[in-house]
Length: 137
Image (tube, rainbow, N blue to C red; front, side):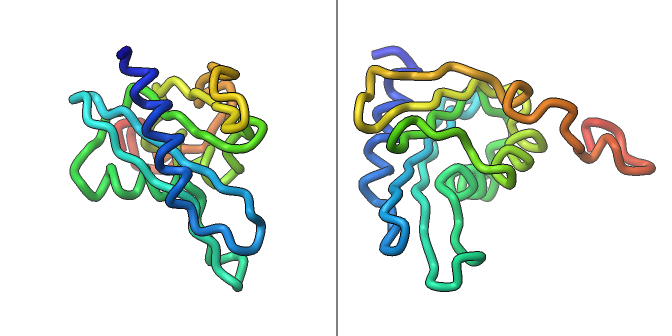
């Protein structure tokens, strides 16, 4: 099985662990780290909506706290193959800027929109834009 197919399968499996009692909009995401490790996450909702966390950020935060710093791809599985929200796009631009983004329609898993972080968030603001910080930050 190709890496992207494994990544998509992991995102679809992660979606099943979603906790979305309010929106019922279950999302799973899986990151492919440079060493081949796949790290997954699912969205978790709170009754205080602002405290909810998207699947992409759950997967990214898990990956970062497990020591991964370079990523080749992220697969996001949701109804309709929705694109990441603005907050997720920002964090992906900061920590996984070179990643391929695979948007998977969980209702039709063979329907995949292949894009990039740069396409989702052109002209991203990153640490390289802060005074005294290089792009490597």
